[in-house]
Length: 280
Image (cartoon, rainbow, N blue to C red):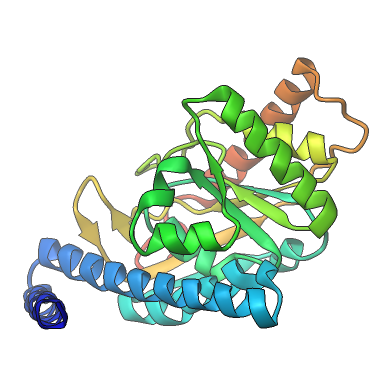
């Protein structure tokens, strides 16, 4: 078994090296090389996360497990693929706790966005199918990820009930992508928002903190099969309070509209990133 694993790793390394060399003349080869580098680092960080969560459960505070793995992503993957971030109002990530963070969801590179900005005492939410993924799913399941079964409304509501209780008792924040899926947008736009994050915030009576990530198709464009180095801007918007709300349809609809409108306006104001991540 060890022999075959070593052989697989050797083939993977050689393929990555070959694509990296070809990447000096081919954008498609660069795309493949950076993806292969990203996946192997992600697997390594996920395995580290499983070990870290076990250690923190026994000797520390498991509430920071996802934060410590996020930082591992940041300090390994950012330099490996040449991506950096500029964050405005980063102090807004830690000004209150617990909160529900909501961010726009563009592509798989959002894992690295979380690596850069994810705060302590926060759990990410994810679709329930990710729980069964090797490496990443193991890590997520062991560190308190809020898994949502979107095909089963009753199960989703029960998940949010548990998450709301956890937020109150452990002061653990939650990060949710309200679009529900990756947009793969090549322009500053967002998909319609699902309401789960807003129901959760009202149920837990905690603020919503919107986090807007600049359209980064200048870095990763899955549709065009390009993956380049560059800088991505992030802005943390002011918190939106939910105290006193009872969760009526009108309140939730108004909350969704208010938050999404503010996020879309900021995303459009950021504009498209150039080679150095500045506006174009």
